Image 1 (cartoon, helix red, strand yellow):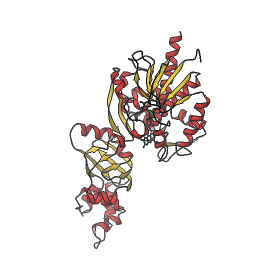
Image 2 (tube, helix red, strand yellow; image 1 turned 90 degrees about the vertical axis):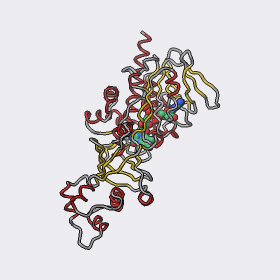
Image 3 (cartoon, protein in one colour; image 1 turned 60 degrees about the horizontal axis):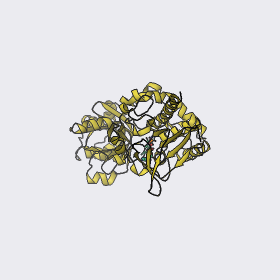
Image 4 (cartoon, rainbow, N blue to C red; image 1 turned 135 degrees about the horizontal axis):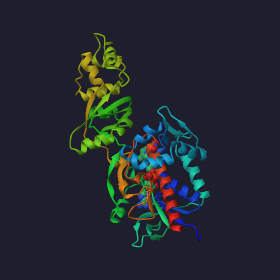
Length: 407
Ligand SMILES: Cc1cc2nc3c(=O)[nH]c(=O)nc-3n(C[C@H](O)[C@H](O)[C@H](O)COP(=O)(O)OP(=O)(O)OC[C@H]3O[C@@H](n4cnc5c(N)ncnc54)[C@H](O)[C@@H]3O)c2cc1C
């Protein structure tokens, strides 16, 4: 198409597909290159337990979830905010609802229907999808180099490109983080990968692990130093998973990095005051064993198991020390789960390597979006919102940059 700028989008996740939609809507010729046989694999995985698209909390609290990256991300997050994202999903025939915790889900709950409708829309906008195309870097002249589905090299010279190559967690979805090699070789600062929103390794006794791995523990507050988070936990064979542990990830990482032992405390009665826990424990009858007494005050077997695990099977029997312990059960965290099992990753392209239009400072015409940028946020819809918003921002950056070239 003479006269129409051609943009290559590399990476077919939410960030790349969103960039492609904005660019194609603006009338540009867009090709999405994806290394896997299909696009949106991590989006599909994210949808398995319910696709948490974004969050409904008020603006300030919402932006704060992005921690130190808020400064860089807020323009993108406000230009394409949770309301815009929900309207977009609605436009794809996937109206959203707000769950009890303020999290936002499509009514279809999973990603499949949303992705199907999205791909139809992209097709109607003329977006070309080239799957099984692995991006490897640039030629000395700046063209993109790929390996095509036959294993042959392919060189693509585009007027601009958007890299949306994802992070390094769940590599089987295609996001293996291997793109860091060509970027570093091109002199772009890429921060080391770290597991984010990952479980932690506690190192249970064999008995506890065997009995309780895979058991949920509802409504627990987890504390580490000054940070705490409340939610549901899952016992794994060697540790803990779940949103409260994920939320403590940055703090735990900092402690472990400093080489100091990372201790977490579990409050098994987050809704009760210490006095209320003591009152519950006082329900113990003289003939009750410790186990019966604990069950009588409402502790499930897994909670009793946690108490026994934390006390080497010797919980105190007096109500006051027992109550104090039940609201601060100590466990030593030895490590984070490996990045391959984390929900997301920290690290990637340093935010200082991109300008306010999402363009790589050292590579005019190349824009970056999504999880491949070095930001992190807790679970709760903030990750996908960040990917979608930065996808829009990168596309807007391309449009503005191409406009300056035409002047
Ligand atoms: C189990 C799980 C559950 C999750 N649940 C949620 C949730 O409910 N809510 C939420 O907000 N977030 C969730 N997330 C996180 C969310 O899915 C990601 O943050 C989001 O997908 C990131 O989007 P992205 O487009 O930046 O990257 P990705 O979705 O990772 O897409 C990047 C794409 O680039 C491709 N690619 C990589 N390298 C190359 C290359 N060299 N050449 C060509 N293509 C390449 C990859 O194959 C991939 O398709 C979840 C993640 C996991 C793993």
